[in-house]
Amino acid sequence: MLFEAAVYLLAVTNVLSFLLSAWGALFILWGAAKAARRMFWAEAEPWKGPQIPRLEEVRTAFGHRILLGLEFFVAGDIVRLLIDPSLNDLIRIGIIVAIRITLGLAITREIRLPALAPRAQKARVGG
Image 1 (spheres, helix red, strand yellow):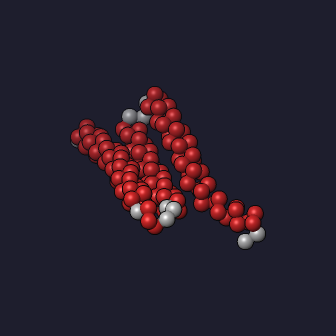
Image 2: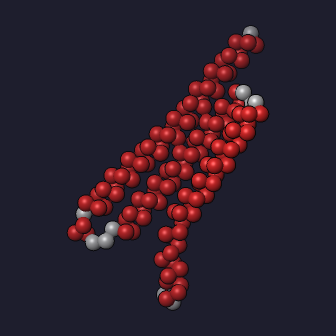
Image 3: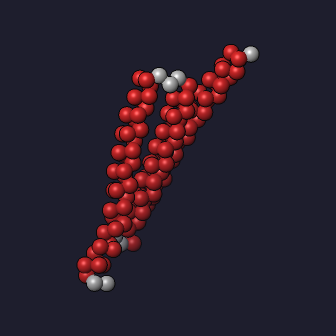
């Protein structure tokens, strides 16, 4: 009875880990497709004038989708760690989480810098 419960729990955690990782990958891919479509239309309409603010919105939205997808990847890794908490797996997932956090901070900084630039410019000009 206990063995059957363990096998069932192992199967459920494997499926949950896979689904979380797959959802993260799909979310990033969906964000990439949506960003590519929006960028194409921003570039395909030159008669509307410079599209820099619109492209910044695309970049910001895509960055947020990447970050959310990475969170699902981390969640899938944590669920996977619950199955077999060996020291090697713990170290590997710790390194992966550190890399993802660093990447997340870099993306967040990249997203926020263009948004802060107009405010800083207005403050220097006095407006």
